[in-house]
Length: 309
Image (tube, rainbow, N blue to C red; front, side, top):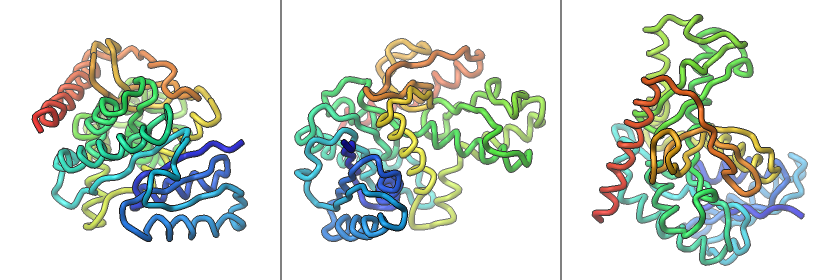
């Protein structure tokens, strides 16, 4: 029996996420958007690719949550996208209202789903979703660390002219300027990256990783990244559907881990059929611990702003 996955938001991120999940064939997909005709048209287009990509999955587009009833996983991509000059935090109040409304509709139609939040500013939005949903913290997860780590690995691969598959890395913390690449844990074929790239150049690569989304927004002018974000969501979905127990950096609610409590932060988690099955504690350097703490404090500031609305 196929899993049922709902993707809320049929913009670039949502539609591409729906396409990636559909092409894997393991789950039926519901694509929801408020704009009439858009999810219906995109879903039909994706459905007609089935014979070509050899997927027997079903996908429908709708403006109603009724068709999403009984979803195992819900991916929330709804919200406005960044424009040049905007930070992720500039989206806060508008997307807070959108994510809050979506979450209420999701839990009204699906019993105990796992929710993956993609909307920005990511860490604040997943926190808001968690508080609105009434679900356990293990079942509300933020996508960001896989994307940020993917960008970091890409830039290291280009710098050293090696396969991305030879690079092991983690990027923790918030999805923004305060993200924390773990340099001590980053290796190229088992060799520490700090032995291969000079400090100043490595700092430039780290900064490019932090600015990865803004760099794409500057090119696109009227939108933001969606190919890499959708690939990151699909990887999380696979881990949950197939109960793989893989460890990925994701935004999780912390309860004392890494010295942080009551706030979502990007940390390594074990993903399985019940969502977050374990938060993996890494030995961080003092500098990395300070960076993660600073990152969580930045998220807490956004949470306080939301509470004032």
